[in-house]
Image (cartoon, rainbow, N blue to C red):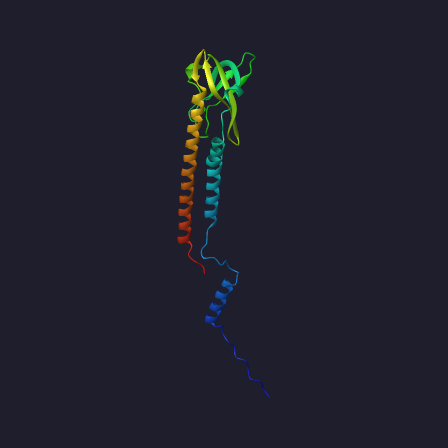
Length: 202
């Protein structure tokens, strides 16, 4: 008795497509309504770091800064000079005491301002500084003069220094708000571009 030969069958292409679709929906492939590229996440992270480190964190330091009462300020006397070329961030003011000690001062209350306190024509003259420590960034702490007397002339007054700090606080608020709008707008636009570039996979 001879058994009948088994007939060879070819796989049904419709069944193969159906299986592939089921596999893709079973979790082996990402079930997301859209796909975001690695470039998008890198750009988001870099922009968040730059805005936070250079805008928002310095703004927090400026907004929390205060000028101590006048009687609590430190007082020092010496010969005035300047450092640096002053092209981008201005010149720091240097005061050399009679014992040779050198103190460096900065008059900026916000990270984007210049260090200038005096005009360079004051170089070589005797000055008296009333100052306090001020932190404008996690990596920057300066001696901030709030009153300067140069050879008997009041060049910077205590009230003017306080007014300048309030102006810097106002600028810090607007800078933080503007950068927040720019950050959300830019990354929102990049997100929209990613949605158009990578259609739905469901």
